[in-house]
Amino acid sequence: MLKNFIKKFIPHFLLDWYHLSLAHLANFIYGKPSEKLIVIGVTGTNGKSTTANLISKILEEAGPPAGGKTAVSSTVSIKVGDRERLNPKKITMPGRFFLQKFLADAVKAGCKFAIIESSSEGILQHRQVGIHYDCMVFTNLTPEHIEAHGGFENYKKAKLEYFQELEKSGHKIIDGKKIPKIIVVNADDVHAKDFLNYKVDQKISYSKSNLNNIKNSERGISFSFNNLEFNLKLKGIFDFYNALAAIATAKAFGVDPQTSKKALEKVPNIPGRVELIEEGQNFKVLVDYAYEPEAMKQLYATIKSWPIKKIIHVLGPTGGGRDRARRPVLGKLAADNSNTVILTTDDPYDDDPQKIIDEMAAGAPNALKILDRREAIAKAISLAQENDLILITGKGAEQTMAVKNGYIPWDDREVAREELRKI
Image (cartoon, rainbow, N blue to C red; front, side, top):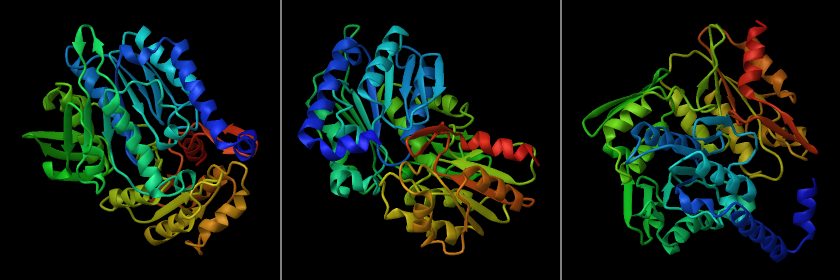
């Protein structure tokens, strides 16, 4: 791909200058739109998209003066006021011009808040430059994108840059009011103290220890918080943390937990996140974005208490030089926790799909290997019996598959529906 050629032959300092220049140019062209919005960044390894979308739901439920209309940029979706669509790009944090236009559109639509899923790779390309954040939310940190960053500490350092910039940036004045600078952090993460180590107006920590009567089932999760009973349709055990992060962030802006409860209980699901596909079959089909070991462990922990017989897991490793070391680890996780493993193509980019499947198979030697992802899903469906569960992981609600020399349209959920209708 041209992008890989450019990375290989153009000196790093020139690429760095190029990305930085684009960021400043985009901010200038669109009139510095982030200065006219309250901008909330959500960063971490897992849970960013769900947390960003839940924050949006609560703030809109609250309405003025504490809440208001929102815009959201996440891996899952792009939302500006009343207009929302699935994210068409295979990227968590889009490019500089996309983001600045998104923020400008939010201003035009009368949004009060912009919530941006903010990635470590975004830092590498200066995509955050020109975005004036007011609040940063930290979900958790586990090893990911290690090759891209040259090690875990560099990965962590990139995440921390958002918090450093928050500390250094000045306060905004919007409608005559000074906007406070806020940090919201998952206190249960081992790296929490590092993300709290900045001078801002308000620091809020959230912890699962604040919850009582915790329950999860295939119908959803429930818990008690602040003497309120929350009954959510979200199903992942990690959604306890996502909900807490959203509640804590909304509280920082003056939204009471009762309003958060009302908003969260209305959310049916987040697309491609522990999403059950129903076409009248007598077994379950679940699509999830999990593509790294910790997320996979959490997914298996979620379904552990569900009334299922056998688990058939369809998954594949990502190409493009991304975190090759985790391929056999993911294979072993699937082999250890499911009855049948089907290894298939995920996003091979320019890599040989068969080779990367073989690397994952080192951890799952008894797995079936089916290169075509649709055929793999169809095979899983043909093997499923009453009360079995098919897991299809790695892509969630992504709308494309990255293949050699480009992208093709793809949605695991739609392919699963199409194959289920055939039976």
